[in-house]
Image (cartoon, rainbow, N blue to C red):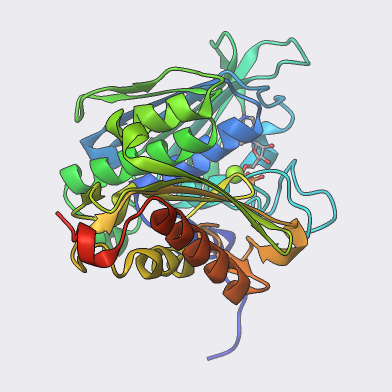
Length: 337
Ligand code: ADP
Ligand code: MG
């Protein structure tokens, strides 16, 4: 077989496999875009566990009509300037929209704040882009994703049931909500009970809204610093544990992450005071020099790589253990309930 160049659509579909794993990953990308656009209100609507419909509406700055075709072109972004060491936005790879457009029916409707012009929309199906046309929209951007993976049946097969996909979406929204308390989030759909997080200037109030009011009385406040790495947040009491790790929230320089090394650090910190099959509740914010952490490990941007993983682990384990010890919690006395 001679060597040939893959078609654009094929390339996008391959990339989509990494960026878009399931409906929840689409939601994550679209919410990140809304946040990067400066939105203060984000509405997420779903149907069929997000498999038949995902719609994210925001009141952000919008996209100019001339930029609409670029927004869905691979490696086109308005965000990354020139330096991977200093990424200030949640997105930077210019991959999400083209990836989604290659595996779903995508509509992008937007009204650009600056141009003051009318709204326009653009549609993509199977990687085929239609020309932008006028649309009705008072502000911001609405991104609609229908029939995710309709063009990639092999992928579709690997999705879980509607309920499981729905809860994965809720999880993504909750993780984002903790990082952005000043933004109002609304998650609705025929397939779920609505979740609303009202905007607040109090990060603690948002954490309580997400994790539960009882968390406040059952958590210790963290504030530790080691070699330029700062750890703040809340570590739940060992008795306030859960059956899964869904209530462990990590943020690195404000970005929600799901990192194995951090999960493992939590386990280590509580190893003596929480039973192995139980999971403590924690909300941890790590702040460090952006040059000491790589957020560009994987297209989904959920994993991070620390320049000094031992330092970070030591900080997390040490700070939590010290807090627990200070409040008189010892393995022998607490046990896990
Ligand atoms: P990235 O976020 O990495 O730039 P995306 O494919 O997610 O890549 O988005 C491409 C571009 O489309 C963004 O850089 C941005 O300019 C524009 N865009 C996407 N979503 C929105 C939105 N909700 N509001 C304003 N602009 C958006
Ligand atoms: Mg993006």
